[in-house]
Image (cartoon, rainbow, N blue to C red; front, side):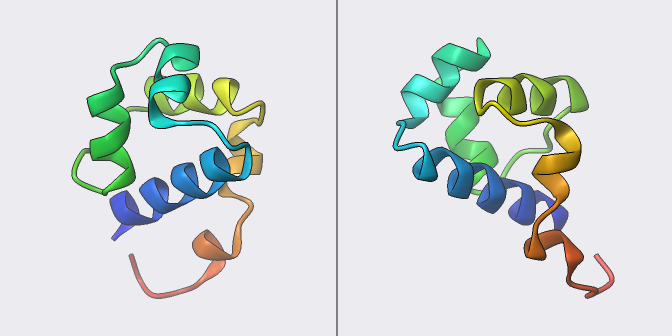
Length: 76
């Protein structure tokens, strides 16, 4: 499921930077509970919010999707 993959990728990038959900939420101007639910794959994320999160993580959207996680072909 794409929602789960996006959530896993956000968490992977966030933890690699050693920042909390609260810190990411502050930098992206989003609510911490929103970040939490996205990381768990429970929410659909808009492209606008994905862009905010990518900016907060200091990457661009193509870099975000340049991961083995999204390269796997399992028809999702």
